Length: 290
Ligand SMILES: [Fe+2]
Ligand SMILES: [Fe+2]
Image (cartoon, rainbow, N blue to C red):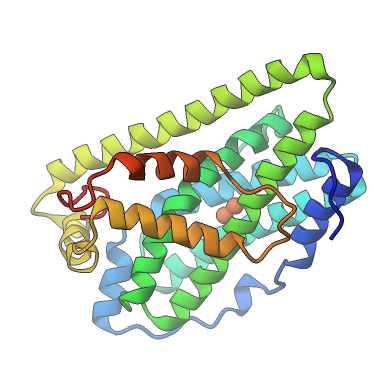
């Protein structure tokens, strides 16, 4: 295996080739949706994620596709356009799933095309790095406990793996862009990137606090509470430490299959590793998993 410099043409080609060659072609409309019994259907409906997932996937598709349209380098263009296609497919899958199982979602308008597609992609990509890391762990808990129908688990496993490819692409693409900028311009790039990452992290904290707030208000009624009760049965045995360890292990496993010369996401796993050093080993049950 030949080594190369981050930002070199070889790096760019490898990151695009890896992405393109690991793409799995299938059409959302060809998915055969399994019949669900009443309990499985209630579990699926009770997940408080559908509105957000439908909106976010549709918006992300437009953001990534816009960058694909404007990118000049043919191989980068192909890889980014393919990522935009996958995001569009995620949006389509969510839409088909919610229609098939009668899960109501709030309507949303056609997402706007970004004015600065490069930085919008970077910001969105770092948001995906944050979301995917924790989603990998949560998904694995669901998989191990047979919380959902096996066909749905297989479908969502594939989507998780696509997100792993997306975050692998984004961290390498960001490093590639940075390394190709003249030295004096790199501090400005770093500052803007750090600002965008901080904004994404802040967004998640705000979202989590709002969810916790509305959870308190909704106690005793509706699907949110149903989800809390049922999910407690599934997730209740996890401490914050064991949940974070699982996220780390899953993150590692999902990314380990790609060329080791490509960079791996560092920020979220690195922060979690630091946190694990200070978290008590047999501490109280953590809120994130309990
Ligand atoms: Fe997605
Ligand atoms: Fe993605």
